[in-house]
Length: 180
Image (cartoon, rainbow, N blue to C red; front, side, top):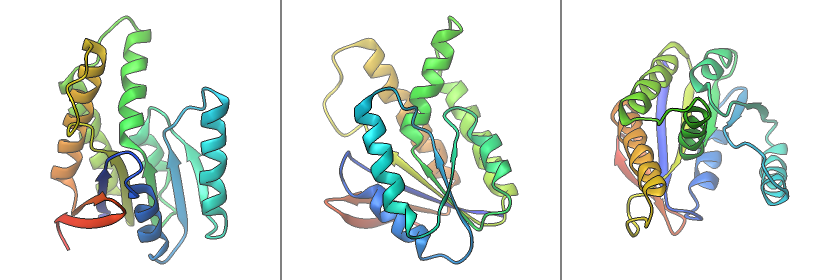
């Protein structure tokens, strides 16, 4: 059964750096599952910098913007899997639903998280998830942004409930909320 670690924090809190360092401290082959679609030059540059930061530690990369459970099933040969990030994954789920003329619901997001956690339980290694804590700021001024905040929050709750360890990173400092 896989060990599930959730690392959360605000934007630029140091959560991705912390999660990567944690994962690189574990033995075995490493896989980075990227959920971010590259939609513009600025994002392309961010992706390039992230890849450079992982190069020395010999990470493999798999892009999985929507079907995260399947990607985790494909990661069976890896001891350590880093998924960055769940909030972009929720964004992608929302976009996919809107393309089908539907609106993503909290129930659908929870079901998707349950599928992801089931895939984690089938995996034999450590799975480290990165996510943004989006509910600590102001209430967004429009319905779509509020829906995104709500869905991301529900995702974070579902994954945290199934995680062995939950760490909040703020100002580059990790604080263990659950587990070790």
